[in-house]
Image (tube, rainbow, N blue to C red; front, side):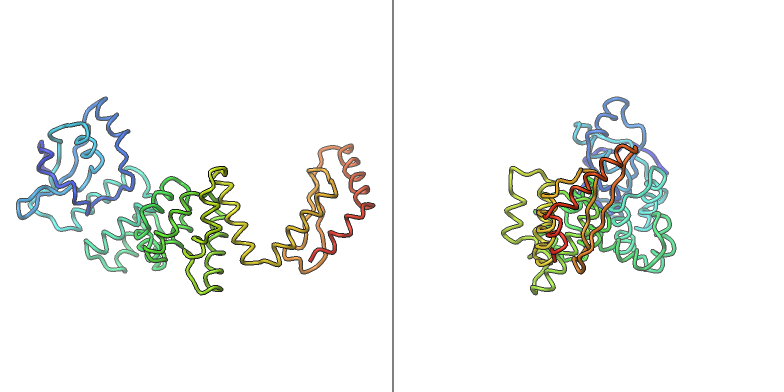
Length: 322
């Protein structure tokens, strides 16, 4: 490795072939550079045609230095002139591996570069590089992560910010970029837990199959757009209402039964710690009653409340809800 000071004007900032890091947020890097200066050199590669240098490692450092108005950066150059794409990218890959584990989007970016820019076969990616990236060496894993690299920018941001799970992102990445682009504005306005993300996406797929449309078409229905755009609702309230709306469309009979059951249940005035649950699909009139108490007195009080409920006419209606 040869080290020297390189003017930023001689570096090609547009070439991101070897970039792995998903987040190029500059604030922490600028703060570090202002406090102690550039501790580690970036790695650059000279071009065979004597054009601007390519960045191999140090994308954030160089952008931070440029934003600070610095004229040059300390840089290292691999020995020899013009190493091939794979040799250069392996420098970036091992540099990243030595720092911290690969995030899913970073692993996806690395695999795409290895396949497209470095010409590595699927077999080599599976046997050599999936383990290096901390992934199981299976073909379906490779395909899922190659698809993940094609995720829409807004969905990438949601995933990076922790609002979209890996499984949801993989599912969305199977759709075309145009369809992802239609879904992204809605998904950016709502918040769903991991389980609800799975449920909403499954409901969208089911409804799309039933109505001969796409999941994006289902998610862009007027009713859902109105919920997502309601300024009086929090993102989590919007998410729950979207889920409820989709569930009603997918299972209207079941939803009506659930609504009727919980309306009748309110009239029983049971203590809050008593759980009264119907058959999940209302295929039978069975009810499940459960409760937890911490003392004999609490048990007696709960038993008395249940006895009062047993004499309430409203109880009969619960067993009739189907």
